[in-house]
Length: 337
Image 1 (tube, rainbow, N blue to C red):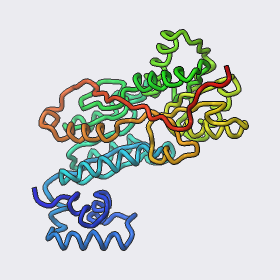
Image 2: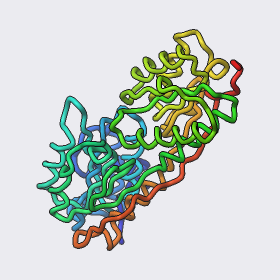
Image 3: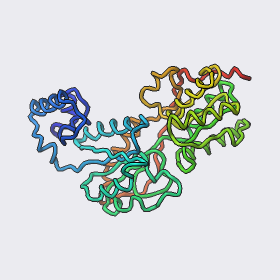
Image 4: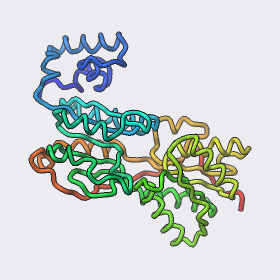
């Protein structure tokens, strides 16, 4: 196949994403690293023009804002895997107050693409417009949707089994003796949170655990919103809180600290994602790990496989991956009952 971006990255001692930035004259690379990449390209005898015009169209990675550390990890992993196929990737990050997902999609209509990978978007939000991706689908651009699609469109659907993840989290807390378990979820229309809520309701019913409606709080994903919501759950007597992501869990730990409570002696907290650095928190966070490497590998394979090419993008079922319980310091036995 010849020299790939991954080969250059290994030779230069940098990531494939850094090689991509240098080749495309993008900012965000120090002069030292830029020189390392240029030297590696020269020593490997690769023409920069060949890298820029290797006959392969780039891949777009579309994500929400990168405040949640799980999304940069997705972008980095996908970029590295695509580089192994000598494919350049560029990421588009949309925000509530900046460029929207719809604006990025409009921009992508004019771009030559091998495909597009969405880390989140309107496809995971109940009641969102059904035609958001029609312009890309009309061009037969292969699309891969990650993390909880709620409706069927042409493309590949990949993600963590959210129902199994929530059940796993609640089983862990129940095994530690917790009965008053608070649920801290994302937006009511966010399909992954809806899936987690439905799984939680089933768990409580099947295990005869009383769970008043006030012990579930729907909020926005974020540290501050997690802190505010967790304070309310703790005031209602929650001895443990299961959170829909790690940011909410960190906010919950902060809430307990503000209220003068100890983790996990007084309140146990469990997150979801296993974002980078969660094991370095104090206390380190017990969480449900998304199998991110496996999901990313499957996403790239779906994008490149013949059955998902520009000529025939087939409807397919969602491919779910099993989560993993990572027990650390933020959960412990219930000492309050």
